[in-house]
Length: 348
View 1 (spheres, rainbow, N blue to C red):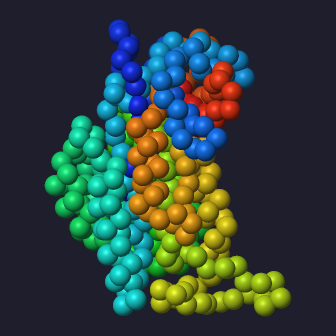
View 2: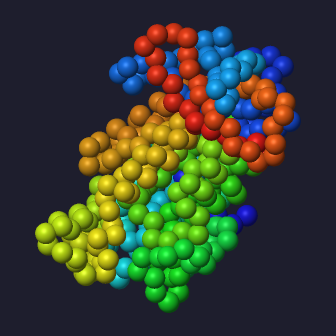
């Protein structure tokens, strides 16, 4: 299996339930969801009778409910290490931060019986550490996540089928193929797994020319049944403001990290933030910004989320065609509670 990106659920025992593999098979759809109060605190101890599932606007009976103790957790941590593409002395501290961030994820999120993979995203998506339950292997992966060329490419190499920012020899897709990394992580790592699945994105949100776009990445995460938690880097090089209209076009700029950007008007902070918000929202996860919330607090919230997850199982309508998109809505009957879940699924 070829991989590249690092990406990062709760249940009470039920008898004679089929395995929850978060995918659509002949007669069962599995949907992960989180239920919270108005203050964001997770709600536990709900029963399947407390949930309402609408498929294409029509109610479906919830036949099964799983929680954390019933299901294994598989996490992909996808780290955007595209700053390593630039040879700038000012980037050394930023590069080391990737390793420290992943080590902090291991300390706060990883638990016994979990499995995790690490993927690094730069000019290609590369598999740093394949799925493992070994904390030692994951720590070793965190230490080498910045070594782009030495690591195997995850999935098909990005060939530059789409217009790319800052394309150059040896990097046909530019220096950050974020959505290729998410797409391949979901398809090759998470989709084949059973149980609860999540992806953690450590990134600024910039993609310079992936062959697979944002919509493809979202669809593949939904197909895999994986919630995406995006953590926007507080020091990401892509945080370059749009030029004011009265100043006219800008042809070059140097970021605070010392990186020369040839097309700064294309590095749109608002667009990148919107993309991260969207992939998290449409997969049932949450988007965080480290300018607003320290990483330690972010990971505490993600840990609480993953350990309070429900997985619902329902039988779809009988006349589904293969690989068809279906709208999905999950509600609860109790007042003043909020449900987060993916908003669509694809039949296989």
